[in-house]
Image 1 (spheres, rainbow, N blue to C red):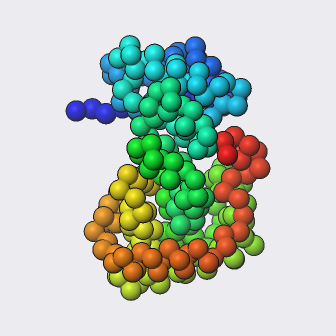
Image 2 (cartoon, helix red, strand yellow):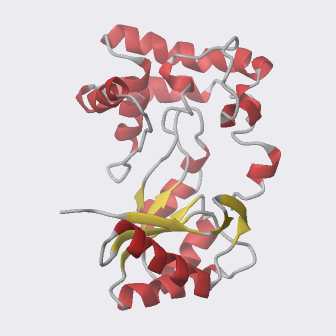
Length: 253
């Protein structure tokens, strides 16, 4: 059975984003376009890409609820939403999944977001579970990213920040060596150990990396090993924001 998901929340002109837009009429317009483009009768999961501060989240949830009642959408998702807005949206239309960044390289969701999701019965789909490649062990402070690579604009990937952040990678690499697996597999396996409702989505364009990522499900952790890695990582301060200053302004916190 073919599955489909789509996102809404940004205006696009000639393929370029021109800002946030989650007005109800635009949400419905984007749904219709996604249905035609994907050639499906209903979108299995319809995500709000970013919370729009100019549109009440209740109105957003209401628009998706209409689409669900019309049979055009099956489930409602949010991305990078605060606990407050997750609750507001969920009260109007149950939220099925939250897609936000979470990894050993970015653990803020543990404070409020994950407890909120667990309470409300919402699935968590962490993107960048490998810290945008940092936790693979394939990059270091001397790495030169190609032109157009988003990491060129991210503070935590600047050379000085990377020098500090290597301590976290060395911790992951040490456990990977002990288990005879890769750092990426340790990072993904750690995520899978956090909560049963967490399903990370590592991205790759290479088959060998896909196979490596899938191997994470075979990594076996003892309870003590998970605790050891979690506590050791907690003692390492990651330097630098995870996005540029401009991009951070689109994050609902």
